[in-house]
Length: 312
Image (tube, rainbow, N blue to C red; front, top):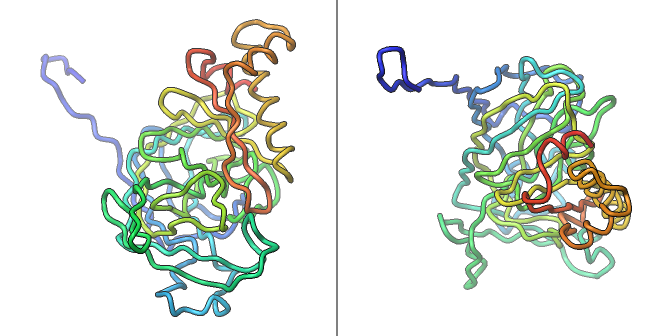
């Protein structure tokens, strides 16, 4: 900004660090905040991997893992001024991951849960550009698997998802994107974890390239409006992040919210917005392996505004 003397000055927000030993295993208003922030503050969340560091190498027996200690989420963070009925804004400024990731398969889990196979862990080397899967190279794209706020009531495990966010496993939640989360309790109580060096839509085998790291975000609050589901700004499009007991239910919810937003944006009837949705809304699978399934409705920004999405 320019001060009254005509000189450029840098306005620095508070930088807050939450270490990776400050974790929760559920999203709930019962958790005491470990830090507080005001809108505009920049917060660094250090995170454990989704297995809580329990898999050291490929010889680790998966039978020895304490499955109650998976999907740790760092936090929660209390954001001052965030009240029920508001929207929490999370600008994802940076994601840094370490140089070793773990991917596992566990019998009875994943998209192919009924197949017979052995439990196995594989260690992957991670560089700035690549994840090394044996001799194959997969492009590195760090993203956040678990990010959410406290639900309106009760307690939701960090391994599941809902309208509060949670274990959404959306590959688009990455550096440069912005997530809009409904606020249900004072302070929102934001927590983040489960980083992946790379993950494809679906997360077929129940894990991706699970890796510890750190996430740098800027938090903000939009007063008096709230989306039905988390909304993601992914550059040239918005995505409504819905969920359901089945993929059909998740797709229905995502479609319903998208059509409602289009109707509001353009002053259309349901019928017109429903037809427009068939032309401009893409339904994508987020994940098929968690207790609740995730589907997103992607809408190019030329057809819908954030205001219409936050009023659904």
